[in-house]
Amino acid sequence: MTNAEKLTLAKHACHIRMGVIEGTHSAKCGHPGGSLDIADVLSYLYFVDMKIDPKAPHDPDRDRLVLSKGHAAPALYAALAERGFFPVEDLKTLRKIGSYLQGHPNMNSTPGVDMSTGSLGQGVSAACGMALGAKLANKPLSVYAILGDGEVEEGECWEAFMFAAHYHLTNLCVMLDRNHLQIDGTTETVMNSAPLEEKLKAFNFHVITINGHDFDQIEAAVKEFHAETEKPTCIILDTVKGKGVSYMTNAVDWHGKGPNDDEYAVAMQELNAAYAALEEEDK
Image 1: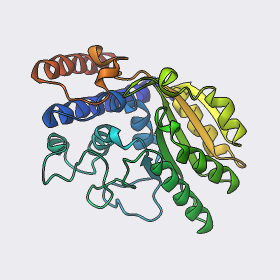
Image 2: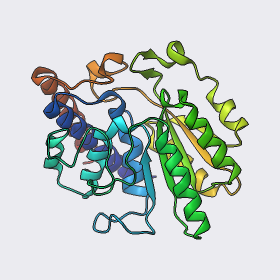
Image 3: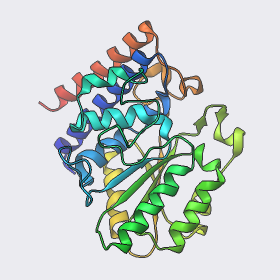
Image 4: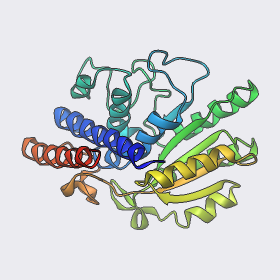
């Protein structure tokens, strides 16, 4: 990947983070912390890897993305808007009565959303079904499922992992957002799931651990997923919760609340400055 390509992806990610802040500020609620930290991987998937067309969101041959950690919907919505599925201005209607952008993704009303999610563990289970269906229909498509590290405390996740391995779902890529924080505190103190790499390998997954904010590492891992011919893949993304906004960085209390007017101003000032620096670097 060239530096110019990485700069373009970084700009998209910055816009996604801005969209997260716009939506959660307007709603006065939501989940900004765990949305900000997946902006980089969403930027890569939606602007480089996934076979999708905003003009044909129901194309049966498209790649699928299931946001199993459905509370991070602000990031998914911002990515879809940035990709052209619907107007960016609509992000300000997040969680409003009558809006198609509700607190958790709804595949029946939101263009580009492939699965309704929210109850943790169910999204990855649905992704397994999509991947198996594609294999049975001989469709060469990829299915991505983004999970939280707090989410994998749910037993249903491990049932899904067992299913994926049993049916050799090589077209399934589980992306595990490893930010070490959940609503009640650190994952290590609430319910320690370590060592995740060894556990997933024991469930017969091909496991790759990367810096979830490094586009070179993201690209290499996704290419490794596409090259895998025997096992489902899990990419463990080491991320920083609240990435991009200083006062939200690694702050557990920003798991589930929206910024007030003053906090919004600080966040947007920081993100606009980050975008301006990328523009300057791109000259």
